[in-house]
Length: 290
Image 1 (cartoon, rainbow, N blue to C red):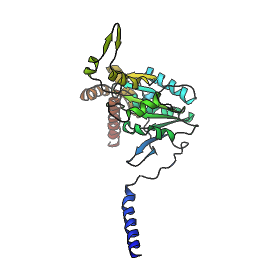
Image 2: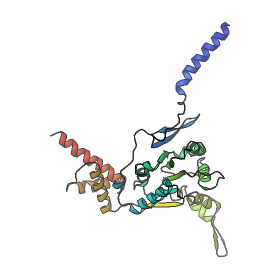
Image 3: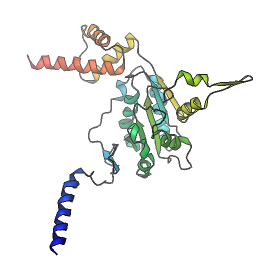
Image 4: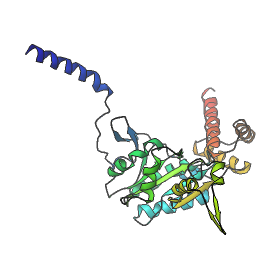
């Protein structure tokens, strides 16, 4: 009996030390009160974690991407109305509004049942488990993956490819994938692969490695491209963000905004928003110090 008591005491001590290292027990998400979740995982399990504070830019603040806005909004309206819609891939220059546009859709369509689930690229291996938790037919779920790109041997590549169009199961009707990437074909391309292309008569047959890399992006039905802004567009975006943040545009704002972009090596929506935050913050700080 003494040995048993000692064993139980040691077991309890060990469990007490291990318990803080274990992930919290998964809790069913109340999607009526939750607009967005992130997929979290440890070595042992994954779970949906509700997002308490949303980072969704105002729809009207996204300027000079009107064609992209119209196309993605139309596709999303089809989706929330239970009509056929496509998975979407947004590609192009960094900071030009790709992820902001996806996130801005959430408050715009939340009343119609739209919900957002953010999944890191590395966690796409859990895609079947994530989709299994999105079974409530009252809601329409966007699986959002930002900055998507793959190396040839990454394990998350094949589950996403199968889920988009290839597996006998596929995605349920109430789930779409919206992804952003700086790469058009999502995987790196090498000059040596072009040397493997074969010419048979008048027919060109790309190498298998090229075909494999193109096949993933081909499974997104909607492609939207984003490009750097010219100076006038950049300044207009700055003015829009200054107004959205409650600031005031003055004649001094224009040269400062251009200098800000020059120091950061480009003109993008992200850089415009960062300048607007600095400009409005300095304005309000100056008023408080008077």
